[in-house]
Amino acid sequence: MTRSYVVRTFGCQMNEHDSERIAGLLDADGLVAVEREADADVVVLNTCCIRENADNKLYGTLGHLKTWKAQREGRQIVVSGCLAQKDRDSVRERAPYVDVVLGTHNVHRTVDLIHHASSHGPVTEILDEAVLDDQALFPSALPARRETSYNAWVTIQIGCDNSCAFCIVPAVRGAEVSRPFDDIVDEVRRLAADGVTEVTLLGQNVNSYGRDLQLAARQGGDASAKVRPMFADLLGVVGTVDGIRRVRFTSPHPRDFTDDVIEAMAQTPNVMPHLHMPLQSGSDAVLQRMRRSYRQERYLGIIERVRQAMPDAAITTDIIVGFPGESEPDF
Image 1 (tube, rainbow, N blue to C red):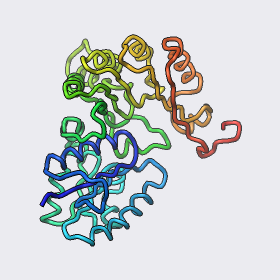
Image 2 (cartoon, rainbow, N blue to C red; image 1 turned 120 degrees about the vertical axis):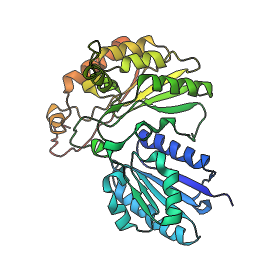
Image 3 (cartoon, helix red, strand yellow; image 1 turned 60 degrees about the horizontal axis):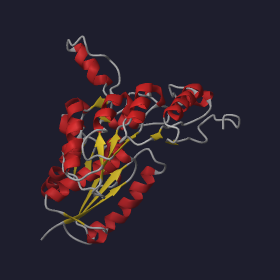
Image 4 (cartoon, helix red, strand yellow; image 1 turned 135 degrees about the vertical axis):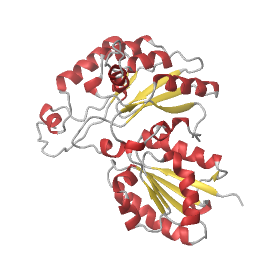
């Protein structure tokens, strides 16, 4: 009898990307996607630990699924993603009926762990960053099940080297690691050949992309390698891939946003004139407490240069209201 599954995603675009890969792996293993938990044999909860009440949302859902699991023999519950990475064994302690707990770097192991749980019982696997290979770091090469046929996420970088006071990403996603340039371009070309016309380049801090690659090259003896971000170069190449009509990206950091990125956006027709750049606060005092490495003047200067190069650009942002210590004048 064919088994079925549901993947429920909480959180950001990176989680959505991982969920597409988890679903693709389950498809490749012969499972069939369904809409409702009532029709499923396997439920995957791909979790977030950044959004408000993430813990409550997860454990409330797990409480419902405990009853769901007891109604039919062989049903399995999988908890993956950032909350699983952060809480590790506490998910197992609070919900011992969960079959698989896997972290942010274990996407490629989803099917193996489900099979292991079927024969050996519940399993928790959180990979140590020190032993990660490219497949664990960048699951983009895995099979994917997308909600639409025309657009796709393309991971260019994972992790973050910043230390913002409000953010847990470095703890659950690790340090910044850039994906090899040619691997990204090759994936975009394959997507275009499959009929995808729109790609979104994805990373925790896309505009620092490539700095670690060039630093490694210099340390390896390549004196010609410049230690600088390569994001503008990537936009220029991806934006000219045959078949790709629209290129988007998320999210840049004001600290690393350079004029060559603005130039690449303005001069590459297929790169959309849309900039989503988190502001977080307009108050320098609050930005300092947030440990954001820019101030109001720098941020507004970037926006002014974007407007000069692309007068009709769409500009969107994120703002944190009520940060601890924020005064009425700060607001």
